[in-house]
Length: 239
Length: 239
Image (tube, rainbow over all chains, first blue to last red; front, side, top):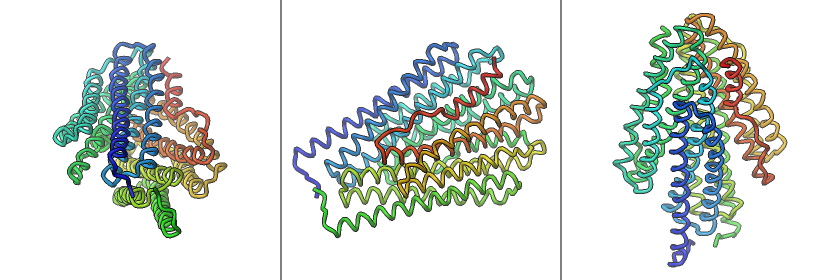
């Protein structure tokens, strides 16, 4: 049923390349948004937060463009199962990146509020988490483009480090909150910022898992989720 | 290119019906999981939490089944643009429902930890939020099946009520935490439970928005997100 003439195959390749370009653009934007949102937090640069919110709309627009192109390609080229799976993967990754953009935007918003709070203390773990998850995301997308299984496995392994950072931050913020009621509000913000970063790490991991599955047909072994880690941290104190 | 003989059209209809059945099953499970997770919270029934965690795996399996069927249908039937859009919508909804299942599971886990904490006070707002978002989800799926634009609009409108509940709970938990350091840990759990419910409301809303868009070709006007509401609540206190 599908045409396999040179012309149609080339047209399909062009379509899939366009989709990959859109994914790269989205990925690049997400990475710079994560970094920018952490800068808002550390430099108290509230003007930059407005830029971040504006740029997020471009990520949303790219997702819609990607979906349109995917539907057009499937409808016009009637791709075979393998090509179809690749298009579905692109669709899923574009939707994951759209969420990552939202997390970065949420961090920027909270960072703006935090910048006005005299009790907000700079927490060194948060910028480190930010750098880590931005790199995980860029590596996961590189693994997708190059179909690099080893790099994908490496990204999945790093998720544990993000979870460890999150659990450590969680404990220290709890202690800080208990010291003085004035610490509660800024600590809650920082906790939600860290939760957003932890989720970006989860999203990068899920892209890496897709790359691994596409290449090997097997799922990477189940890993503990960030939420379990935080619960374990909390259970220590609630007993 | 696509075959339009009666036989193939019927086969396509059977496929799409199977996908809709899978979505209904996932939706029904999600709804009962939300209710069960709130029961764990209010009745301190920790054994039930284990059931919820086990049942979540069935939701995950249904999503994978749905995706397989979608890819098969596209590959075998080469559907026209309209049918293709419907399959893509099913794929998106199944992925949204998988997330909803995760949120319910997270609530059950936190509820288990909370049930051991003597300072956890039953907060009446949370069961109300639970009932509200479970109904929003079931209405959003009904709107999808019946292509009911009015019901979809109604679901979107209710999201504001969820956000109002969340903001009210947020403020009262902040006050409760400031009263006594022993209140901090259980309040953080309750806040994360409420955040999960608020996200389920967002997911139901996004399904309703898809139904509206598919029927009218237009986006429903932009609504404020839960995170903005919580930030507004916090800003009052951080100034």
